[in-house]
Image 1: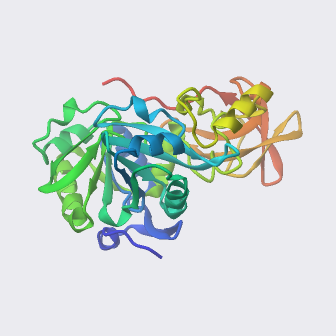
Image 2 (image 1 turned 90 degrees about the horizontal axis):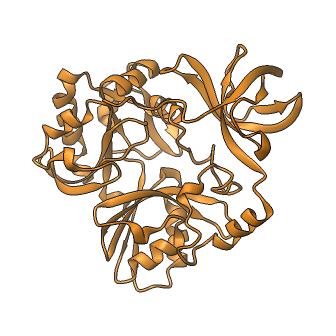
Length: 362
């Protein structure tokens, strides 16, 4: 299995390690619930160096990025980023990604770890423009500091005024003594920063954040808490909510699609889907009976098969068992009674508004 530059740090901290898409990654340190609550109330630090980075550079960098993604990259300003999708011609997801505009001739894409080679090939194959595409993952380690205390912790380690960085914007500057890209993004529903730095600086950066965050209650966090945090905030996970057979309209992600920006891969298929009508849609649910609706469980309407659970678990912030599932579009709305098949038994549940959790204004 592949390992991030922080592997030895995780081992020394007593993390439980698991295979995650071919990477040996920490699933938990002190415990999923403890780590989850640390992010919601103070701060948590995640190693996300397994994520992939792709750089698109050259005079036609914008044209290529706009052609392979669903969102309108032309609307980005220097130092701004947005969530977007890479699609196949039939409209299904190759991956979901973050697009960062460095300048008019340089775009920086953060992609999912297990998909990075596939994404790179997809973009490179589509490159009929005057620009270059580089799979740059080996140049970066990535740390995610998330939670209401993230700003106070991170500000101790840089002269860059982090409070001036708006949500989904980024700056390049020194962080913990090393050159870094500091983005106010994340996958938890909380405020925070994702810090991209060279792999040789990863351990020192991790240690500096943990030391600076000690008075604030920062804790190292694993993939377990990352999953429950993103689920409470209804953030999609590739291979669960989205994949090759799922379109953005199915996944309740119409907001990342700009059909009028010009030609892009999947545009025609999405227009056709809208014309015919979307038939299924992602919706949130809470278990009202005793049980947890886990990933892949069948969902029933009036006792008949109607859909499936994409993600489900207890929600530590809410003291409820929650999940996301696909249902026929006419039932994908709050207040619908459903049953989730748990250990061959239908258990009552009800569809609800999402996101399940919204961070309080502080």
